[in-house]
Image (cartoon, rainbow, N blue to C red; front, top):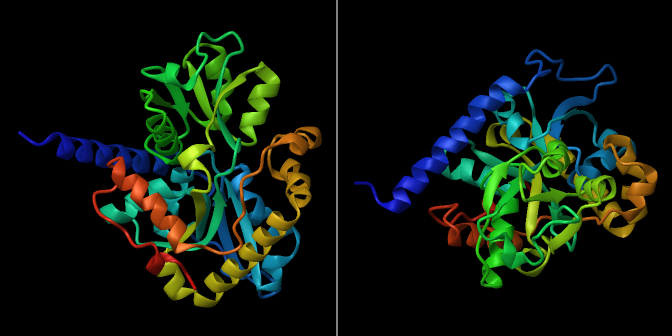
Length: 325
């Protein structure tokens, strides 16, 4: 009989394949025949992005003219899971995926599904940029109470469950059972009692607390999660080879926007209502992630080690060669 580890690996492979197949049916609006250049000569890029604080640098780069300065016309397509855009990326219908959680894409790279390249870092985890929320009257009073309980995450076996497991392991607490629920549906699922808790990322975190009166059971950006790279701007090796100038220009624009976001959080708070459903008042109280101005292979290796420890990777991956210069 196959070993338990082999059965788990096969199960993860099937789940990833299922997500990719489902995503091919979900993703709409991609035009494989799109014009590669705008009327003014700028190269057009299509970027799939989640409406999260992770994507703030993308929108800042667009709205502050940083992409235009690099000769790029960036069109942003909203998705509710970054994995939804993977089939389009593989077909060349989407050029870049923003706010792409590294865990899913490093797994795809290891399995040979995606010849991954990282154009720029998105965000690193900071305190309360994501929280485990429970109803105000929940019987769950401490993180230890999560053992065996149903917790909603946006994608199974991604950065959310990885970091929550690490936090609970460090506290010698039992792990929960994860349920996949998209961020916009987490509040209603919690309200209806479909799950015991939700692992919510900003701006949904603040919105759920405000709308439902949910309380924070655990700061999901604490302990071993703090400072960990969470998401990035990813593409394919084929895109970088074919478009080296555009790839480098995109990286420079995003890094300049990330530097602005780190230096001036008010710029992010002003931008958030433009592409998320939060109000200006809500944007002022949201906990922002850290926006690194440059990618750090050492920080990404820390993520790889954690994935290896939890069986989400079967071998070490050196992220340095995956970073676009």
